[in-house]
Amino acid sequence: MKKSKTLKGARRSLAISLFSGAGGMDIGVEAAGFEVLVNIEQDEHCCETLRAAVSRGSKQREIIESDIHEVDPEALRIRLKLEAGDLDLLFGGPPCQTFSAIGKKEGIKDKRGRLVFQMARFARAFRPKFVLMEQVKGFLTAKGLTETRGEVFEELKDEFQSIGYVVEHSVLNAADFGVPQLRKRLFIVAAASLDDFDFPTPTHQSAKEKVKNKTLTRPLHIPIGDVIAGLGSPSHKSEGARTDSHIDCTPAGDKRRIKGVLEGAYLASQFQLPAEQRGRLSKKDTTKFLRLSRLKPSNTLRCGEIFFHPLEDRYLTPREYMRIHCYPDDYLLKGPVRGRSGRVKNLDQHRQVANSVPPPLAEALAHQIERALAATR
Image (tube, rainbow, N blue to C red; front, side, top):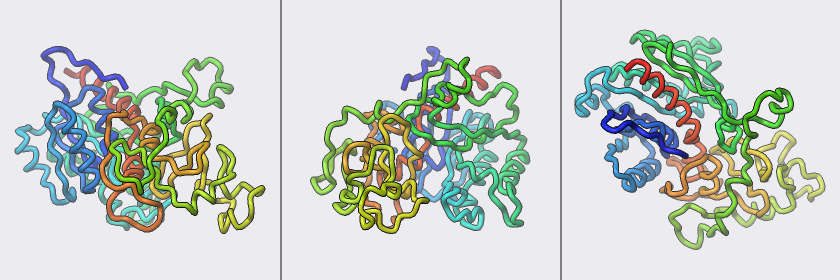
């Protein structure tokens, strides 16, 4: 990922990151030329990852490990010696599981569903020139307390409009921006005026799009075979920690079940294999025991399941997930590499990646915001 150049002597645009996770969005925002002053994140393992990233760089940044409800935005603004309106960008990706199509869709009935409104609470104190928020597509139609479709999004817009912001949104596919992953997410932008802002134009296209519109000259979506090659054999998690996260956590039973599944296929569809190997999987289980294809972008990386290597009988490692998400190779994850069984309070390394925004997509959005800022200076 190329880093943006700033004019000598020019002030870098200032940003604050909420719900920072492992820092994927931060990487992209910084690459677009912003200086991130503060990260606010509750998960202890994500905070370890963020601190490791800061310690390797030359910039100073405060990592606040806290429930966001416990952070007073007005006190933080004063401590940072910022006047209301000084901040250029407030950005973040509030937890989205409660709005996800694959979740229980409990919306704001789940306390996590109210976290999206923390973006407006901080915006009210800082009055940033721009707000950027990431969510799942299901947020657009999420029901509120009156069970009306789209009610939560409308409530959020009302919150921003009450402090003088207009709101626009777009669903973007990470694969269209050079990420080897089919990942569609909703991005919401708010500002006092959006006259100078446009959502970024895709840089890549699918093979289907190329056939449909031969005038498009964009390169094709990047397949995962182009990015996961060259890492060598992973270590097994029982062999001790290695810092690059190229660690195999596949249980012996799962190695046996994936054996024989064709590249690009999922176990439930493999009727040439013994019935006991397929077990209770149904034809709807298209992501469980999915072996990715080297010739295509990955399915959306998720927290619930890890996808399998195209050729080897094992899960992809956290480092391979990072390659698919386009994290830099010198970026290090902290925290455990867990198996897939059981519930966990804090995020393991696979989940840290799957929860985050791919850096190139964050960079494309931040570049557009920076251009709009420059037009008003």
